[in-house]
Length: 210
Ligand SMILES: CC(C)(COP(=O)(O)OP(=O)(O)OC[C@H]1O[C@@H](n2cnc3c(N)ncnc32)[C@H](O)[C@@H]1OP(=O)(O)O)[C@@H](O)C(=O)NCCC(=O)NCCS
Image 1: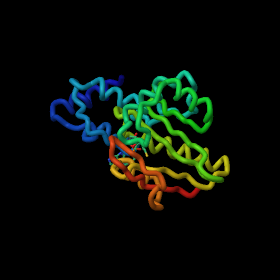
Image 2: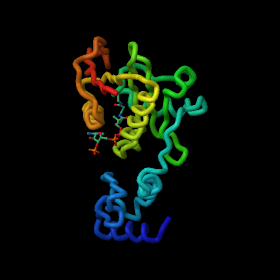
Image 3: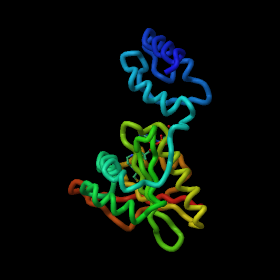
């Protein structure tokens, strides 16, 4: 850890600043948008952010998942079950199957070697891919999802796919905002209706032309 960073944290502590208000962290390259306060008493969280984000998120690596990631990948997935169309938790074994079946189309985002999110692109129709994306709640809002989507778009283009589609539960407004921000357009509703906690729920369909 650098002494300038520690000094910045201490200044933040004295004035009770949020992390983005600490001048040293506020330059163009950093763009930290976390609302977390950054005093010394919360230093671990601050350092966690610093380690991944001070260098423009360079510590985030995106690569295909391996079967040894299955347990962690399932854990991340199951934490966000209320936002996903699947009703029941996914097991490590099932996740292993998905990883084996989808190979290069199942990407993981790693922060200093810790898996923090994943993106699955599954064939949909002739020339389309259907998206499934989940970020560990602890690491949401830090542009990791956007990095994964951009990588997915590149991959799909390189394989000559023409379209990405995603079905979003109608109450999942964070995901709606996320996909709109990443250039997806609403095309209507999915033909599927999902029963979530005993209630029929519609799925909005969004698409991205490659
Ligand atoms: C949706 C999800 C993948 C977004 O990933 P993320 O890494 O947190 O998103 P990013 O940091 O890249 O956000 C990019 C943009 O999306 C929007 N966004 C993301 N999270 C948001 C939230 N909670 N509320 C409102 N807008 C949000 C914002 O416009 C944001 O840009 P901004 O920070 O400049 O305003 C993540 O929240 C998640 O895993 N949710 C649970 C699972 C899920 O819903 N998956 C999609 C199923 S269809």
